[in-house]
Image 1 (cartoon, one colour):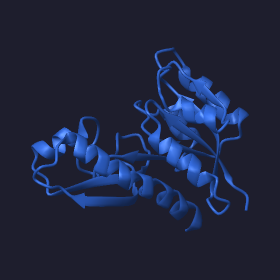
Image 2 (spheres, helix red, strand yellow; image 1 turned 60 degrees about the horizontal axis):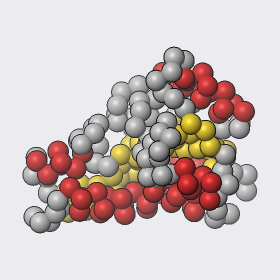
Image 3 (cartoon, helix red, strand yellow; image 1 turned 90 degrees about the vertical axis):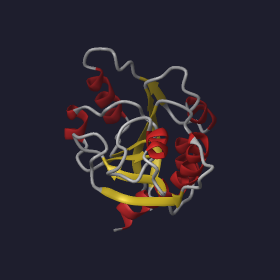
Length: 186
């Protein structure tokens, strides 16, 4: 099976990155992670790149034309598919135009509800009865691309922000690989 050359963009802990790396080691999983792009030199997730010997680069997103540098690396590593795993930047139109329908993101809510940041506190504040995660294609509008898959759980009255975060991450570890399989097996 020829695996799809993939780049994962991260900004933080990298728990979804680690999960994708582990899944990608399975021969039947459709992607191979060939590159990791990070915009935060203090991101713990880079340790997974080192541990699993995956090339990685830091991109200073405050630099002018940083997208050109990203595109250069994506071309150098022959990347066909991009996964955003906790990447805390909006993807520029320049990158979107080069990777139309080939960039996916995981978001910690049941989109279209609670786009953007501070998701868990907003979920609790609005007294939702359930929440979860969404894997979606990335487009020009924040967290608005078409949904690939969603997973949910019911919120307990005692749940706080940290509880929601932990429960959502467990679902993300199932949803992200399932979405990738769905994309390349459909």
